[in-house]
Image 1 (cartoon, rainbow, N blue to C red):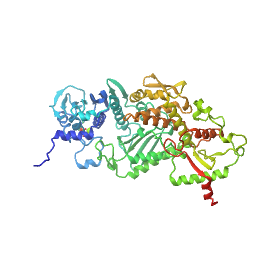
Image 2 (spheres, rainbow, N blue to C red; image 1 turned 120 degrees about the horizontal axis):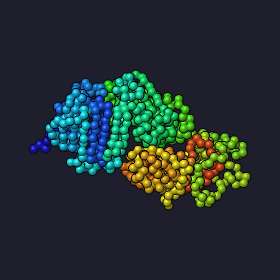
Image 3 (cartoon, rainbow, N blue to C red; image 1 turned 180 degrees about the vertical axis):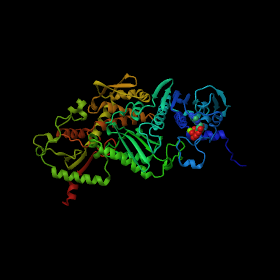
Image 4 (tube, rainbow, N blue to C red; image 1 turned 90 degrees about the vertical axis):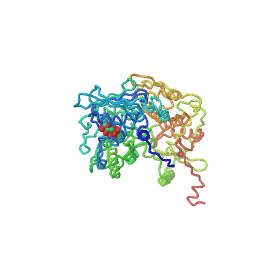
Length: 613
Ligand code: ADP
Ligand code: MG
């Protein structure tokens, strides 16, 4: 007997829902997109308990009549495409005709809608696929859809939902994408620079448990809106975010580029929009990375808001159920134009203060490295001469952020390095302001100053933290910063870690915190930058809290920030300090990222190279 049966429609919808409806935030995305497609100018999203209890989205769009509202929740029903030819140029956010049917198959739904030319509204209720009839009611024009108890008949799916806080932060993320996407979505050929389609943006509100999280006015220009959505980014400042624009061969680009000073530890702050749709695209991401090459340290990611406009026929959105990926017909053009537009702007902007550091810090390719080592040896042999013969280094007054700054008991036990004793010559030099070449008993070593210092600080931090907290120092002036709702929870959830690190944060006003105390060991690190990056890092780790690994990452970050950089001239006493610390530290041969800190050369090797043996 045949084993195969045809699944009933509700089962089909539930299975489809697995693709489209992953969590409450997916529902928010689909409903907001429908509202935009319906021509809304105002959307209010209200959620309860992270969207698990209720999600409601109300708009003032074109609405639906009785016939349409009944049909909208059937599978494969859409007003956005009619023939296969329409698939060639999708101008709406939706087109697959499956979102409402999928959502209605896994939750309790009530939809109310009224078209502007009708005096009466209609509503329909659906409980996990069981549809009631359409009945008249009274309501404003537009559409409101309430989704209650998502996945309540699917315990396995419901179990996968995270805490209300986590779900809310996903909702905020989707809300943010829609709120930004609507910029530059007029006719892609025209591109009204300031506003969206109707010459203005949308009024958008997000409410959680009755509390208003965001109320964004349609009159906002892009920078203002980014400022509201990301209070921690200095989006309004023209020196922190620069604009670039280019238009060639039907491809229009507008981009707001964060300078290296506002870079982050993840690429979470890279928003790419294509004709109003938030997308992820590996070509564009790569182009962004390339554009910043040499301007950022390797573990930093730029903050970028990129808006691409192009004819709808030039790409396919029908490749991913949630339409987050597209296929460009000419991906090379997109890549090269994005890269050229960003790169030109970055290189023609005065970013000097930052550009110096990282260029030398990128881990060199193998061939490259050999060359650098050869150069280093040549330099060493050429320049190795007594201290007094060499011109003076950096100002001797400069405070060297050695680990012993806040660690009296370790510092006292240090014996002076050989180079200091009596008439001994100095046995090291700094080359290219990045490497230190130092003589050893049986040859010499080349030290990567940043990598070594980073390692020493890391080890020291580790030791201190394993026996208690880091010493901290009260800031003379507490430094305040704004945080979003989700990040407040991140701070609260990691209170113990902050304490261990010696960072004291206190509430300082609505959505504002202040740094009151900061570890003395990180005295040369800007507290505000550090705390922001730390919160970013903790935010990313919310899903899998492996405390030990997290701590390691935090300490890595702290060490990297506190260490001297490549490109920084060191005075003789600073180099001596570094060499002394190297002698004391336990395992300094690799920096915390795994790169070597020191390369050794023995006399016998040299003799072999020079054919003396
Ligand atoms: P799609 O958006 O892919 O067409 P959906 O299942 O999301 O599919 O929606 C089905 C149809 O319901 C839409 O094509 C649209 O005609 C109608 N619709 C959905 N939401 C709204 C809304 N907020 N206002 C007016 N019409 C809507
Ligand atoms: Mg839709």
